[in-house]
Length: 425
Image (cartoon, rainbow, N blue to C red; front, side, top):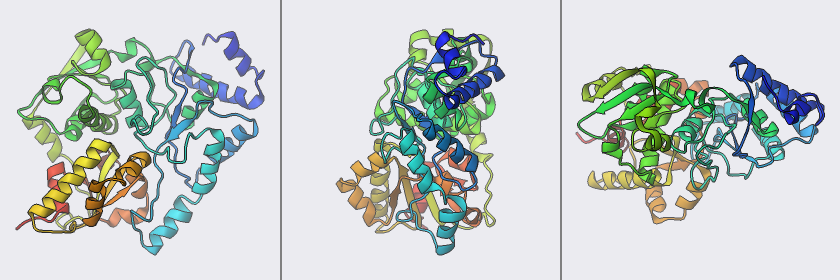
């Protein structure tokens, strides 16, 4: 790997032994992927995936202490993935509380103190959707990032046109501290070419979770170029369009390993370059109504008693945007009214970013939603399901990401709404 003099100085310890070890890790990471050089991180605000104080992550906490002891930090700060717990809005029994507070996430308090010393931008900067306006971590087109969190990297690459590889935990903060990352994969023009042309030929607007799932399963880690979707979502990146692409992208990243997708006529690079983004020898995949139904029907139900009703519904993984949160509140209140009911039929938890929740909590829509018995939390539902006791519970979701990583059962939005507001005979 060719290093600049500045990079060599860091590697050779001229800015301290600990920073040299950080740089060596970044260089070795690049060597693994045959990177020729390191490039400067141009959007300095990082995003870290390891937001949970898991008791078993003792090596992480030792490294964090070593960074702090050397006076290192992310100069422009960083945001984090969601916190793991919220006992007020996601109620737990005594045994659950003990498991969450000690066995699982007993180091949360200590870990968050470390994060503040290393550059955490605010106490409420915990969301998988750090790119929300309310979160403020929004890179520009062409910016080079040192992020982790598959759905955030996917969104930043695709919808914002930034450049970031699918990094792991710790690599994210190391790249942000030294200010350089290896140039390979999605940081290169060639790596951003699409190896698949996906044509959408549905008779109605496809559900983003299922469409993204179908594509992720088929293309795996490759870049897809999607045509025909602009008919249903428009060609402007409105709040509604961005919310759709957030959920679509998260499904491609979790049901496959997609770090970047292009939507013809919609996403920045596709608007500029069109089908010139297709790599030589690209493959094709046509998605129609029957294909989406096939994918949907393939999802397993992993409940012990699959014929019984669900008891807990999580909505928002990745976190709901303000537009989505308000829409779900309206739909829940309206559906209950139409059925002559006042309360939701099962525990219903909507997940969003802390600043989004804080703003929403001041509105009349929030008050009406609270009257239904539904709750709004800022946790990561995946972290909730890491509690082994939840494996025996009948958790429902309309998130393909949560479905993929847990035993939660997937329902389409309308199906889930009907269940949580009380099915009519």
